[in-house]
Image 1 (cartoon, helix red, strand yellow):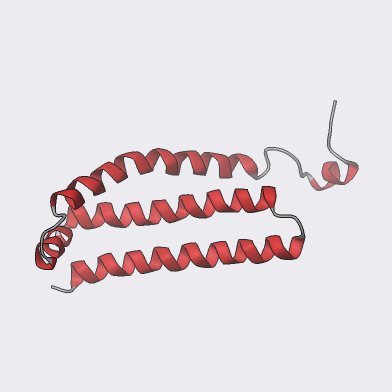
Image 2 (tube, one colour):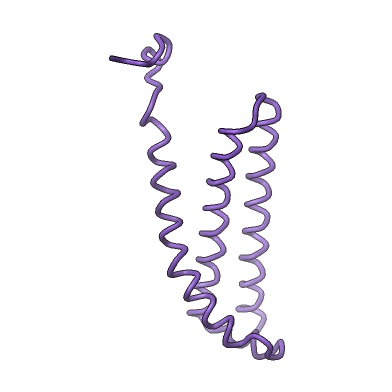
Length: 126
């Protein structure tokens, strides 16, 4: 028994043509966030309350900088995908949905780039 419309059958649309990749990507980013968060939090917590120079020196370390970059990129990719699903599922009306999807994309890209720029500035500022 096929629950797709005639148009969906002709165009090849239906389940498993886009959603599975998105679902897997969401799961992979959530799994990756567990070790990345732990690897980020321990050096961060160790330097909490220290002066600016000590924290900057800690994140000038290539390992800490790479972990911070990976965490930032993964967090905003995961956020973008999660908000996209929520918007697509719960926002009624195509104009509102389109505007919110665009705002979601712009926000996640902008904040991700700000985070990457901040870490790069720490690493390359000497």
